[in-house]
Length: 194
Image (tube, rainbow, N blue to C red; front, side, top):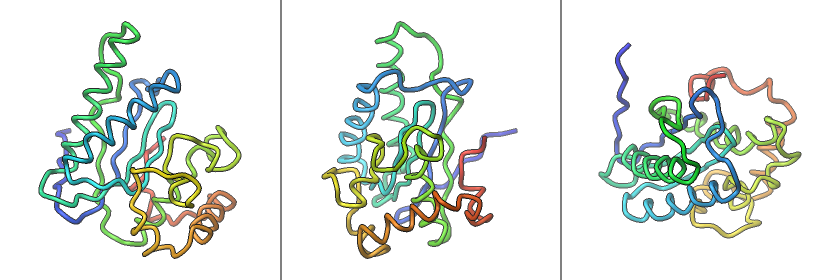
């Protein structure tokens, strides 16, 4: 099957994700997560890509981004994950691919899908059983969303415009965690398949 190319268009939102090759870890220690986030901060300054929501998990990642300029959102991910893979391979004496093929990219075409995807991304560590609450996971921007941590990989205007207050968003996420089976079925094509 040929590789499907998603068109990158200014002003559009994209869910970009991938997992480790063979579902193996892509982060081996806490510093790996921090290094990847430093790469994102560095490259988002020059690409015109805004990170809306993200979550780094031990063997996969999720990013919801908005392309604010002409530079394709995919370029950011090529730069960041090529640099990250080379650094990890060098540090741990690895050879070969770290990821399961190319990253997946899905254009979000409905606002309601966008909102559900945000809470899906932020709830990921809780659903996976890594923490009891989303604010306990250091490697997502959930705490920036609920105003309990300062950070640069978050669009505070997006949060305020679409959710009002931090407590309203926290309640929206908690509702999903408590009732996961009620995630709208039309969201399924936007998620990382098991």
